[in-house]
Length: 94
Image (cartoon, rainbow, N blue to C red; front, side, top):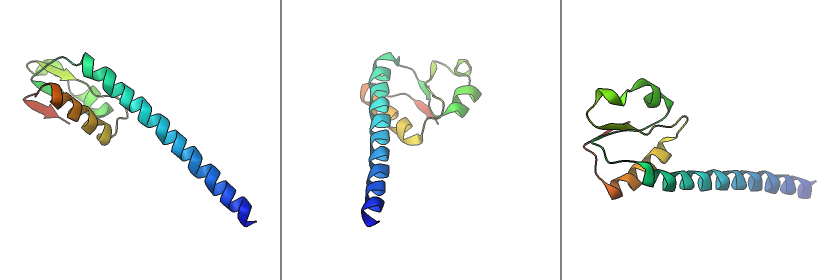
């Protein structure tokens, strides 16, 4: 009985581990792709779907909206950290 419980716990945690590993690899590859596609601008709009649809970059001078649907703040932080290595925008809107 105890061996079956330990086996089920191991199976559950290994499934979670591989799920998070795949998500991490996908997010890192997206970060590397975005590093080369983002053009320098004075205003960066970042965040999830709320900022993607609610803020129009044409209302700002030289703005880029790089928001993605369902993006957690930690991914936004990683993107901003990589962007700040290449150029420094005047404003960042989250």
